[in-house]
Structures are given as C-alpha cells and as structure tokens.
Image (cartoon, rainbow, N blue to C red):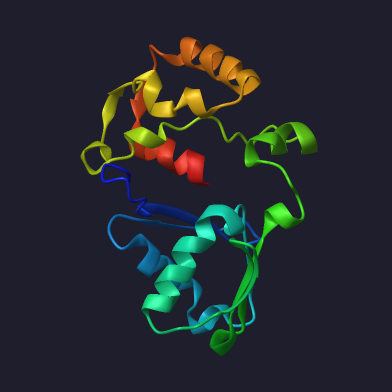
Amino acid sequence: MQETGEHIVNFAVLQYYDGQEVVIEGVDVIKKFCDFLFSNCHEGFTAIAHNLKGYDGQFILAHQLSQGIKPHVIINGSMLISMEIVSHKIRLIDSLNFLPMPVSKFPKTFGLEELTKGYFPHLFNTAENQAYLGALPDIDNYAPNFMNPQDCEKFLKWYELRKENPFDFRKELYEYCK
C-alpha cells in the first residue's frame, strides 16, 4: 500500500513446486509470511523469489533484523543476492540471477499461455481500495510515465481494450502476485 509513500506488504502468494499455493493478506503480511516460511516444516528449503535483490528481499531482511535474527546475506552493492536463515537451514535466492528478465517476458520466452503478468495499478493499492469493485482504475494509477515507450504503447492499447470492464481489486491483486 502506498498512500504514505512507504511501501507496506499487503499481499503475498507462495507456491510450492507442486503448484500448491499459500495466500497471505491483510495486516502484518510480512510477519505472517516470515513466520510461515521460516517455520520448522520448511527446514532445508530453498525459496526462489523473483526480484529478491531489488524489492522483495528488502522487506524480508528488514523484518528478520527487527526480530533480532541476523541472516547470512550475500550482497552486491545494495542488491541482496541471497539470504540464509542459518537456524532453519532456509535459503532465499533470486530467480533474476538465473532468468534476467521481468516476469512479464516469461510467457513469450518460454511459450507459456497460462502465465500472464499483465498490468497492475500499484498507485491504486491503498487501504481504502482493498475491497474495491467498480470501473477500471484511472490510467495514472498504472504509472505509464515510468514505462519505456514500447511498453507504454502496449499498455495504452491494453487499457483502451479493458477500460469498460469491471475491476475487482482483490482478484486482480491475486492474479498479479501469483
């Protein structure tokens, strides 16, 4: 959520290799996420996050440090390459180290039809909009001015085709995060 300018994790989807999902949402998502991931039942696991080094890992690392847990980390500049919670033998690695592309490029790269990252109105992700059902959020909520020209052109076409469609915030957030 972003109304204060501070990014607060409000939704997470974890997926096991067999496809089973765990959805965590609401308040204290990062605490619930870490409590779940770093539980004894995951001892010896390696968790893979896409963009661990540039975004997701910062929240996990900050939470662990706030709990007095000092993970073993490998850092390159300000980027978190990997993190290990030694006490639980749990390791987190970044898929970007192996697949250096945004998730939105996966379908085309790997010929996947069932995976679509799509667009999400990050600036619309505020406390008051968590249960929103209504018209597609205003175009500015998608921050097209931060997209490169080619991606912005694709986005504008996508938006034009969908602007009359109903928008279910919770459903779209889940689809974006899974």
